[in-house]
Amino acid sequence: MTHRCPVCSGSGLEVFFELAGVPTHCNVLHETEQSARSAPRGDIRLGFCRACGMIRNVAFDPARMEYGAAYENALHGSARFRRYAEDLAAQLRQRHGLDEARIVEIGCGDGHFLRLLCRGPGNRGWGFDPACAAGSDGAVALVAEPFTAGGVAGSVDFVACRHVLEHIESPAAFLDEVRRAAPDATLYFEVPDARWTLERGGIWDVLYEHCSYFTPASLARLFTGAGLIVTRTGSAFGGQFLQLEAAPAGAATTQAPPENVAECARRVDSFRADYDEKASRWRERLGELRATGRRVALWGAGTKGVMFLNCVDTDRQAACVVDINAKKQGMHVAGTGQRIVAPDALAEFRPDVVLVMNPNYRDEIGARLDDLGVRAELEAA
Image 1 (tube, rainbow, N blue to C red):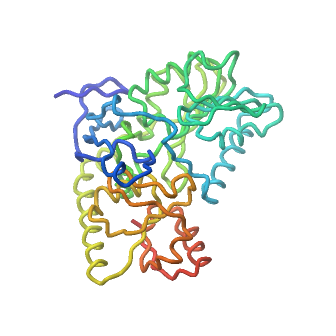
Image 2 (cartoon, rainbow, N blue to C red):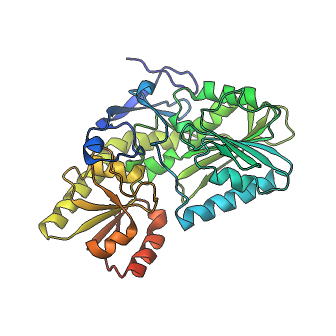
């Protein structure tokens, strides 16, 4: 079967990786173990476009996706992530002169980042997200709906869209919608960086919710194909995030240089073997821990943790799953069913080993364990 690239429209997407029967939603909360274990599942078949560097799940079915109140993926419970978001918002406000500006955020969550952007004098913000709690505090209004061209009356100066584009079935059509709604706006987009997954063994970032995996080349190609000028690209948050800023065609600005896809192509060719080796190594490690009677906790019930548990720890060796997001606590992991608990529960569980699902949070987790009086070995998964 021929698969067409959603970015450059080429017909040469080559399938290089397959994963069957994973939860379709890693971040939907389940109130019971039974509900979590019977969570809907889907298949992943990743195809690579050697023309533009795009990676796509060609088995993705948008009809399986639903984002509502049960979806929870807020990360700003972490002090490290809050610092990142605060610094990013300050940089964007300064770089783009966001004073007296009309700002839109697509996929706003609870509005935390939008409020940071609106700290500039006279700024007003509108956030769109089907999973948010609608409301307004004067300067910021949250709308519990998907973003559409008619969502905001009047002109828009700046659009932020973070960790949404990878969920969108038709990214080119989505970007066209954004341009119709805000033809004169500067755009800031942020997505997971596929290079992290390919180069750093970030295999737990392969999940059904993400139908698209962007490299710098494919992300820039998408925006230039929409008639925009890519003014800035970069990597952030320890290499895990890919950033792009764009301006309307004709703006007085400098185009960012194009990226080469050759290195990503080499990593794609070895990814299947890399994935199998890492997954096998972790199955062996969990077996060793079981054999020696050591108690294992997993810290991080987000996408990385959910995919690790479903792909490697299917016999639930990690008996305790921790997350600092209070909305996740008391809920259950999609697919495997473990109950998610607060960090304080580790004082009673007394783990010997804590699996750290995101290395960016290792120091933060270590400090919290010290506060709890828990002496456990930290292992980055």
